[in-house]
Length: 95
Image 1 (tube, rainbow, N blue to C red):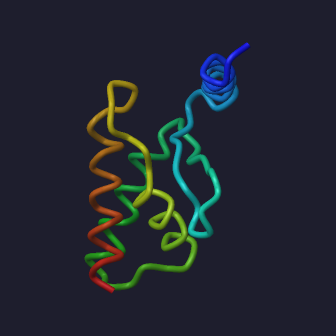
Image 2 (image 1 turned 180 degrees about the horizontal axis):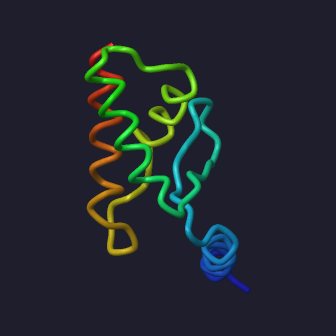
């Protein structure tokens, strides 16, 4: 078995295990996952309100850091995921 085939098998297993989650990188450089199931819309709504109020609470700030690094380029993710990443990056830059 080659390294390439092992990587492919590992990627397939990871995709099955984390179905419905968005891959990202944590602030300390580790692999992380954002829970799915409507969390994207909820995050976007909460972040938009917090930015309007000019107050991003700590738990939302942690979510921003994950969304800002989200790996959402490609056909597996929709426009909401890409909007979340862009909005999170904007919020973190504005601080």
